[in-house]
Image (tube, rainbow, N blue to C red):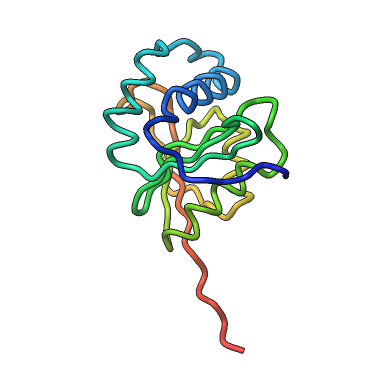
Length: 152
Protein backbone atom coordinates (compact mmCIF):
# COMPACT_ATOMS: atom_id res chain seq x y z
CA UNK A 1 0.00 0.00 0.00
CA UNK A 2 1.47 3.36 -1.00
CA UNK A 3 -1.38 5.55 0.22
CA UNK A 4 -1.20 7.83 3.23
CA UNK A 5 -3.84 8.04 5.95
CA UNK A 6 -5.00 11.36 7.33
CA UNK A 7 -7.93 12.86 9.15
CA UNK A 8 -10.34 14.59 6.79
CA UNK A 9 -12.23 17.82 7.26
CA UNK A 10 -15.41 19.36 5.95
CA UNK A 11 -13.47 20.71 2.94
CA UNK A 12 -13.08 17.05 1.82
CA UNK A 13 -16.80 16.31 2.00
CA UNK A 14 -17.56 16.47 -1.73
CA UNK A 15 -14.80 13.97 -2.62
CA UNK A 16 -15.75 11.67 0.28
CA UNK A 17 -19.35 11.65 -0.97
CA UNK A 18 -18.13 10.67 -4.46
CA UNK A 19 -16.10 7.77 -3.02
CA UNK A 20 -19.18 6.62 -1.08
CA UNK A 21 -21.44 6.70 -4.12
CA UNK A 22 -19.00 4.96 -6.49
CA UNK A 23 -18.16 2.19 -4.02
CA UNK A 24 -21.76 1.75 -2.85
CA UNK A 25 -23.18 1.55 -6.37
CA UNK A 26 -20.44 -0.88 -7.45
CA UNK A 27 -20.97 -3.31 -4.53
CA UNK A 28 -24.73 -2.91 -4.25
CA UNK A 29 -25.96 -2.43 -7.83
CA UNK A 30 -29.56 -3.26 -6.91
CA UNK A 31 -29.51 -0.11 -4.72
CA UNK A 32 -27.54 2.09 -7.15
CA UNK A 33 -28.80 5.63 -7.42
CA UNK A 34 -30.80 5.47 -4.20
CA UNK A 35 -29.52 8.98 -3.42
CA UNK A 36 -28.45 11.89 -5.55
CA UNK A 37 -24.96 13.41 -5.14
CA UNK A 38 -26.61 16.43 -3.47
CA UNK A 39 -28.35 14.16 -0.95
CA UNK A 40 -25.05 12.40 -0.23
CA UNK A 41 -23.29 15.71 0.43
CA UNK A 42 -26.14 16.91 2.68
CA UNK A 43 -26.01 13.63 4.63
CA UNK A 44 -22.27 13.98 5.15
CA UNK A 45 -22.49 17.63 6.17
CA UNK A 46 -25.45 17.27 8.53
CA UNK A 47 -24.82 13.81 9.98
CA UNK A 48 -21.49 12.15 9.29
CA UNK A 49 -19.22 15.16 9.82
CA UNK A 50 -21.32 16.26 12.81
CA UNK A 51 -21.00 12.95 14.67
CA UNK A 52 -17.96 11.07 13.37
CA UNK A 53 -14.22 11.22 13.04
CA UNK A 54 -13.40 10.79 9.33
CA UNK A 55 -10.10 9.44 8.04
CA UNK A 56 -9.12 9.08 4.43
CA UNK A 57 -6.70 7.07 2.37
CA UNK A 58 -4.99 9.41 -0.07
CA UNK A 59 -3.10 8.37 -3.17
CA UNK A 60 -2.99 11.69 -5.01
CA UNK A 61 -6.69 11.97 -4.19
CA UNK A 62 -9.01 10.39 -1.63
CA UNK A 63 -9.45 6.72 -2.61
CA UNK A 64 -11.15 5.48 0.55
CA UNK A 65 -12.47 6.67 3.90
CA UNK A 66 -13.79 5.55 7.25
CA UNK A 67 -16.22 7.44 9.48
CA UNK A 68 -16.38 6.24 13.07
CA UNK A 69 -17.47 7.34 16.53
CA UNK A 70 -17.35 5.80 19.98
CA UNK A 71 -18.17 2.11 19.53
CA UNK A 72 -19.33 2.35 15.90
CA UNK A 73 -18.05 2.31 12.34
CA UNK A 74 -20.66 4.27 10.41
CA UNK A 75 -19.04 4.24 6.96
CA UNK A 76 -16.12 2.43 5.32
CA UNK A 77 -15.74 2.68 1.55
CA UNK A 78 -12.85 2.23 -0.87
CA UNK A 79 -13.07 3.01 -4.58
CA UNK A 80 -13.66 -0.17 -6.61
CA UNK A 81 -10.35 0.07 -8.50
CA UNK A 82 -8.43 0.54 -5.24
CA UNK A 83 -9.81 -2.45 -3.34
CA UNK A 84 -7.69 -5.47 -2.34
CA UNK A 85 -4.65 -3.24 -1.65
CA UNK A 86 -4.94 -3.14 2.16
CA UNK A 87 -6.61 0.28 2.19
CA UNK A 88 -9.78 -0.87 3.94
CA UNK A 89 -7.75 -2.79 6.53
CA UNK A 90 -5.56 0.26 7.21
CA UNK A 91 -8.60 2.51 7.62
CA UNK A 92 -10.28 -0.02 9.88
CA UNK A 93 -7.08 -0.12 11.92
CA UNK A 94 -7.47 3.59 12.70
CA UNK A 95 -10.89 2.97 14.26
CA UNK A 96 -9.68 -0.13 16.10
CA UNK A 97 -6.80 1.87 17.59
CA UNK A 98 -9.25 4.53 18.79
CA UNK A 99 -11.85 2.28 20.47
CA UNK A 100 -11.61 -1.10 22.25
CA UNK A 101 -14.93 -2.31 20.81
CA UNK A 102 -16.73 -1.49 17.58
CA UNK A 103 -20.02 -2.41 15.94
CA UNK A 104 -21.20 -1.88 12.39
CA UNK A 105 -24.04 -2.78 10.07
CA UNK A 106 -23.73 -4.19 6.58
CA UNK A 107 -26.26 -5.71 4.22
CA UNK A 108 -26.64 -9.47 4.29
CA UNK A 109 -26.24 -9.64 0.50
CA UNK A 110 -22.91 -7.77 0.60
CA UNK A 111 -20.78 -10.89 0.85
CA UNK A 112 -17.54 -9.06 0.04
CA UNK A 113 -18.05 -6.75 3.02
CA UNK A 114 -19.04 -9.64 5.27
CA UNK A 115 -15.90 -11.58 4.34
CA UNK A 116 -13.77 -8.48 4.89
CA UNK A 117 -15.17 -7.75 8.36
CA UNK A 118 -15.01 -11.38 9.46
CA UNK A 119 -11.39 -11.59 8.26
CA UNK A 120 -10.66 -8.59 10.49
CA UNK A 121 -12.15 -10.08 13.63
CA UNK A 122 -15.76 -8.92 13.49
CA UNK A 123 -18.42 -11.42 14.55
CA UNK A 124 -22.06 -11.35 13.41
CA UNK A 125 -24.35 -10.81 16.39
CA UNK A 126 -27.76 -9.99 14.90
CA UNK A 127 -29.62 -10.15 11.60
CA UNK A 128 -32.69 -8.15 10.62
CA UNK A 129 -35.21 -8.29 7.82
CA UNK A 130 -34.42 -4.69 6.83
CA UNK A 131 -37.72 -3.15 7.87
CA UNK A 132 -35.91 -0.59 10.05
CA UNK A 133 -33.36 0.67 7.50
CA UNK A 134 -33.93 3.18 4.75
CA UNK A 135 -33.16 0.69 1.96
CA UNK A 136 -35.51 -2.00 3.34
CA UNK A 137 -32.64 -4.42 2.81
CA UNK A 138 -31.92 -7.30 5.25
CA UNK A 139 -28.83 -6.40 7.23
CA UNK A 140 -26.46 -7.82 9.79
CA UNK A 141 -24.87 -6.30 12.88
CA UNK A 142 -21.20 -7.11 13.50
CA UNK A 143 -19.12 -6.60 16.63
CA UNK A 144 -15.38 -6.50 17.24
CA UNK A 145 -13.76 -6.51 20.67
CA UNK A 146 -10.10 -5.81 21.32
CA UNK A 147 -8.45 -8.87 22.80
CA UNK A 148 -6.69 -8.40 26.13
CA UNK A 149 -2.92 -8.53 25.90
CA UNK A 150 -1.29 -11.50 27.50
CA UNK A 151 1.33 -10.78 30.13
CA UNK A 152 4.72 -12.31 29.34
